[in-house]
Length: 469
Image (tube, rainbow, N blue to C red; front, side, top):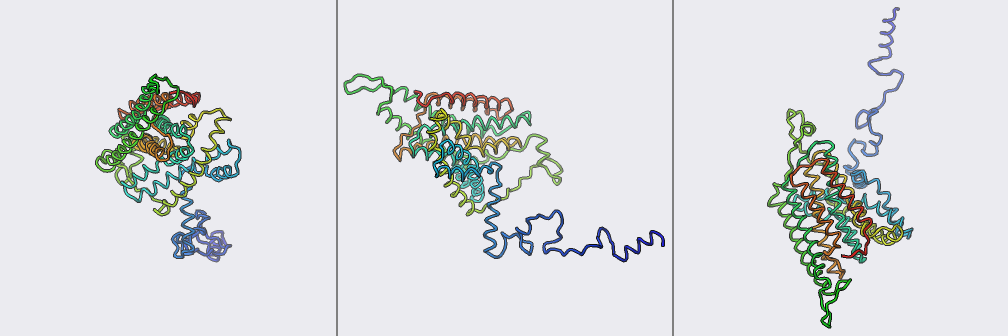
């Protein structure tokens, strides 16, 4: 028998068709289809016998735990900084067990970074279900929740310098550090980027008003200091402000805080209702971006496909996450603020530097990353909204609220900042407004903002807490 005949006989006897191996038993098919090397090893753990996800199972005792695990996984995987969540239990344990105060500060300092990210994620998930108006109000409330919680804890402890410096530091970190990184990173990819100059001008005008709200109390303090007569009719030149000066500054601060809150409410109405068309997303202007966002169906014409982002958490899950995360942030903030005095004594760092440079970077870490990423993708309107919008919330909402809260609980929280801090704030707002006025940005403008922030950081590193003014 020749060779082809032998092969034909072998094939017919063992039915060797295609890649079928005659020396192995046939593998039974699983209920959900053929299994192969591409099948997930976790499939049997996440799906039932019918092939449906366990979180959609008809049995409650299966569906609820599976859905909880799934939502937890999606939430923890929402941002890379969530790897720092390991420091959350360590920070709380260090505070409960009264470890070394430096260790307590560092652990809780790192713990707040992922908590801020989770708080931002839960806020976005909840606001997506509440509509534009309520969603905007929710983002306004929780957008700077970490800074607000830390400041409330410090205010209740009487740490006025921490509160004032953290508020000022949050504004400076957003308009200089975050915006500078956005301009720099985006400018390295694109020669020039454009954004909505009308929106930027509106935000910068409100920032100018907020800077005036700090300049006026500082100027009034300087004008009134040492101008009151004592009981004998002799003018006194006091090193410390008199009761009358403090009372006048408090009246001015309380009135200004109420006015700033009203202005912020009007801005929300302006943005969400009456002039919402001004805040619509602008079309992409760079050809490479148009190619990235075009599809074969539109012929490559550069029409961006706006797909609705998938919402992971339902309103109940997002609301529960907000409450739980807020409580954990408050606990970590309590231990963080309680260890600041020890850090000041041992590391010889001023409270002003801690509140103005260190705490804002931690509280805004997630927003910083988001703004830089969207700037790299040439979504400058969103980057401007994150950087300038967050600063505006601090200036027009959070700071006035803390002044009113201090008024209620009897703490001397006012809008009178030190003269040096007020001048730094004014110059920063002035330079930022000048750079964004034309609606265009490049890497050089980003380098200028970062350079100014570095100069300010060095200045406040050597700035003493007991400085006058």
